[in-house]
Length: 462
Image 1 (cartoon, rainbow, N blue to C red):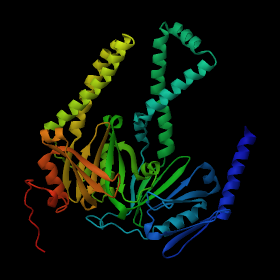
Image 2 (tube, rainbow, N blue to C red; image 1 turned 45 degrees about the vertical axis):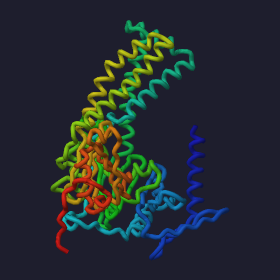
Image 3 (spheres, rainbow, N blue to C red; image 1 turned 180 degrees about the horizontal axis):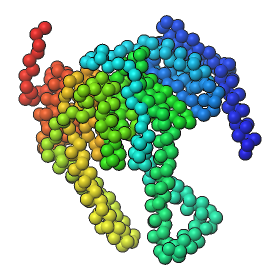
Image 4 (cartoon, one colour; image 1 turned 90 degrees about the horizontal axis):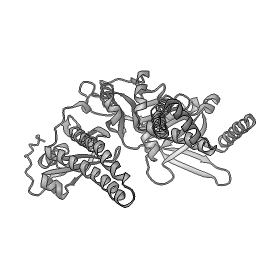
């Protein structure tokens, strides 16, 4: 095994040396030029004002060699110029290149821009590791580990023997033992795996505001990552509370910005500013990022939505459970009566759970305008509170189904070039939703409204 490892390392080193020799780059006042390739020579020229991010990544081997991988992103969603990758680049050269390419970054305007100084905004607290096992990955990884163990035992013809032998030790039925083993796998193996992933991913995490007008996230234990985001591209933040983490009082902070990475994986990776941390810490960091330290927009008092929105969620919950139970009943009538017992037993569990989730989803609904931000919250499995700059809203989509119209509800969606591209205020009272959209961006929606009873706006002189 050792010779194979040596060969792999040698091959990687040779590949890196080859790429270093056939790749060159230089920066002029207007463009970033990259030349690479041997048989097919490739030349790229990116305009410097289009460059949105410069990220540095180093796995353990690259760290030993003192080099990194540089990814230069333009925020394009199509074509071959979305991301340019250079490797290997010496650490000091990569830092200098990032500083040069992001030198055009401008400090944001707005309240507090001149008061909030540079420096560290957040550092990971090792006590936050308690949120790691609450990830949805825990049961997934645990189930995979338990299933894999049983499969390996089956390959050697030992699965039944092992289950029966251990079951006889404890005086339990084999089926019960298998269920207990799977539960242990879900809880223990999944928890350990997610803790290990968290440590590798978020160890040594820091969030800094740099003098060059960027927010910089640094993190990683074995593979280090340094991500830069121009503050001038920031349009807001999103405080996300996954269900399990929320029950433990946790939330994470994502950036709402233009020009993020093109791939979905890199986009999610690049927009997270703070891992799951206590909710009050997340709100404080969100406020610091927005330069609103005294009044966190994501903690503002929200306008609740009418009871009709609660009814919609309860009906959806009951409909989902009813559909699942109907499938079990039909299969039970056609195949085996055992499924009929499964149907009524599962209904005893699913109906109360669906009601709790529906009521929780209703309590999450809310919206308001605070300062320069539109704040909206929704969701239960993934509760998200977005604080979006009102100037970033470029359009509105108004949705109203037949059932919503009968209930007097409306969904208004703010369209923006930042973040996920659209943020919805779901099932608001019709008058409240239209008034919110008109007040958030005066004059944008009003010309398209016919017969809507909106308050007259008094424009300031001049």
